[in-house]
Amino acid sequence: MYSAIASDEAWLEQIIEELLGIDDFVAQLWKVRKSAADEGYAQDLALGLFRSDYMLHIDPTEPSPHSDLRQVEFNTIASSFGGLSTKVASLHRHLWEVDAYPPSVKSFIKDEALPESKAALSLAAGLAAAHKAYGSSAYRHPLAVIFLVHEPERNVFDQRHLEYSLLLNHGARSFRLPFHRIMDDTELSDDRALLYYPPHCPNTPFEVTTVYFRAGYAPDHYRDQKDWDARLHIERSKAIKCPNILTHLAGCKKIQQVLATPNSTHLFRFLPDEAEAARVRKTFAPIYPMDGSEAGKEARELALNPDTSNKYVLKPQREGGGNNVYRKAIPKFLNTTPQSHWPAHILMEMIETPSQKNAILRNGVMQKGGVICELGVYGVCLWRHSKGDILENWEAGYLLRTKGDQSEEGGVAAGFGAIDSCCLVDM
Image 1 (cartoon, one colour):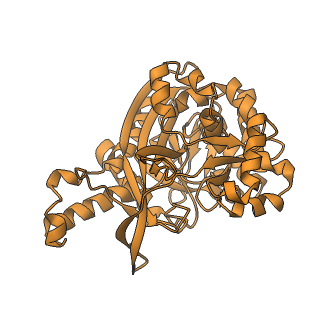
Image 2 (spheres, rainbow, N blue to C red; image 1 turned 120 degrees about the horizontal axis):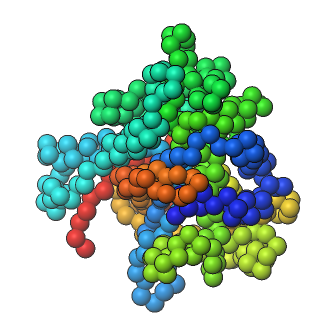
Image 3 (tube, rainbow, N blue to C red; image 1 turned 45 degrees about the horizontal axis):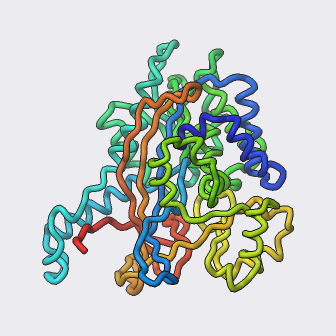
């Protein structure tokens, strides 16, 4: 569905243009897209290493509450922790095999109850598929995949597992390129091939097949115009982008909102099969715009009322965690924010997740008490932008995050949660 959204530029423009006058970051991203489109895209292939996040939801107001799976968000850029989630699942299985768990716990955990996470292998296979689909170098340069990263990079050990798998299992060389060094260490050839000059051997250029963004998804990643020029530089190139600028924009919360707003018909544009659309819609929490439409007016009333705002979260068009406004804090936030900026947010009904008792080890400190979990499902998709043809598409493992039940946010890198693994039991 998201490959179709990213390939439908006319529809995407119609939705994104609502944000251009009120969200500077989205406006800059759209400016990059327009410049690349006006020149003509040099690469028709696009790669997505996606993650769709879910939580269990129980409506406490129902007479006979039952649990449903609700989507938190869909991540189209820098979907992290595929590497570390694989290791944590292996760690928990190892502890089970060496009898590290109390007998009372191990007695009801069977071997098949601890599913292996293959996220690192599967995501690396997605990068390898793009690397192969790129083809050979017309200049006979060696080929490589680029990981665009922060400097310094806090999440380096998660990324390393994908790098190692890419080399060991697929023979594909990769390099880590700090986002702020794009213009220093790369150049475009006459046909817009992206050439990378490693600082340790600048006389040996590598032709870049695939650029994997693990940076560039937040406003503070762009320090000045040079960094925006660098983003356009990558977008103009012949390298396969993961994601390209259109797929990045497709991950805006506004897109999630127009698909999930009650009675919206947008979903059927991309999922015309009614049964399939119904299955997907069932996972959506109600989401509303904060604009001047009828749905937006209704949302504003809900958000400004302290009694009703307690059931909602206000989300901006941002990734990375720590950006949302929750429940009773929403009215105060809106009353101190210019009304003209309200449409840059969406209002989403809170997912009310049942709490469990568990322990979290974080920064060497053991914390015990009530916890809730969030399940992320990775996916790989390689497609042709111009025709929408899907070349590769598979589920790529999982990420389970656990946090204290008093915490609203769930981002591990942002300091709110911890990586966990699944244990399957009969209920």
